[in-house]
Image (tube, rainbow, N blue to C red):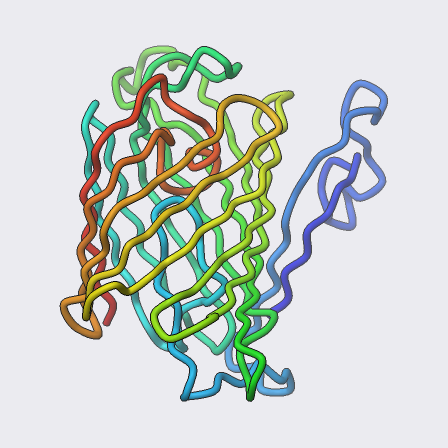
Length: 276
């Protein structure tokens, strides 16, 4: 699989439209991502994963540098105060590749941002690519990924004019280092874009197993616009395939641009994750 991130002023990447620029005169750039996946391709060498290095767990609003193992499904369900919820289904069809589908309803965003009012549900589709996996004495995971989606209008009847929806784009690069048994640190440069708005940020996360099967997770994203978004709480790994979390956060969502934008006040969330 090949993941390309690009900036362009062309309308699309097809042969028929590659010569056409965005209106009015091609002055506005477009940020995008292109994933080329060929099922069953075996002439690409994927990063080898050392069996002696534990795989870092996913955080709350910061993705780790590890993608799912091949042929693995992952389901996440989360709910919080103010009517927020998150549902994500991920699948790894081949080594080094993960495909994500997300459905969320965000908390209300702070007035510091130029975002649509209300809390309409939104869908996001994207994926992650494993660029580096631990081998030998170099315990570092590196992955890149992105999500693109749009708000949904469930209130308008099919025969009535619908409210305008808003499209969002998000991309990040996550580097996770396993520093010691039970301790991992993640750095994640990231950016989100919608309408004419672009916000970049640097995500920082730390996970520490202070008792068996119970992790303390602390995360923060320092952003170019608006307050710092953060999340902190406990993550319990009951088994190899099931985990549960309880945490507080001021981010309006857990995925994509929602993990960068802050709400006026923090809220509590619970999350269950299962992989199979």
